[in-house]
Image: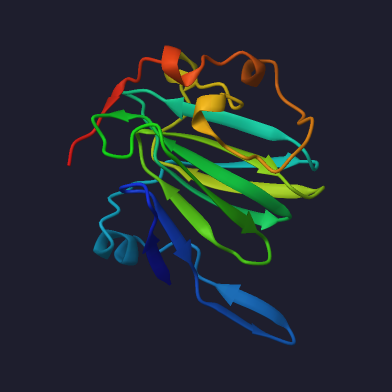
Length: 184
């Protein structure tokens, strides 16, 4: 398993070693030992799955302290553009985003630590998105940022996305007061 840095501090791309033959494939999607060596201190307590058609945008979401969530995300089937935005006040990469294509074919994963807003756009029908979380869902601590905020300059790779009512109403980044502070 390769654990690779991204331009955003603490956000990591993960490329598993995939062993395949004419019967199919096998890969290790999580290793506490390897994650610890890479500096990822994560105790996962909840697994989630979503199913979407092409053109759906979900995000940009986060959960505030004391129920902040780190997420290990991947795609089982289909393809997404996965996006994380650094929302940690004082971070050298505050307000910047990183986007990566995750797919059932490339099997890449993204480690999104607490302090990042997260979203994705489905690029294929019948996409199954999986994520492990370091804390349980808490509607009281749930927050969002408007996915289409022009100041973030995110190219979601979809035209006329399908959005939830909640995702149509998030605040713009400049109006947003982050509950996170960067700690080097």
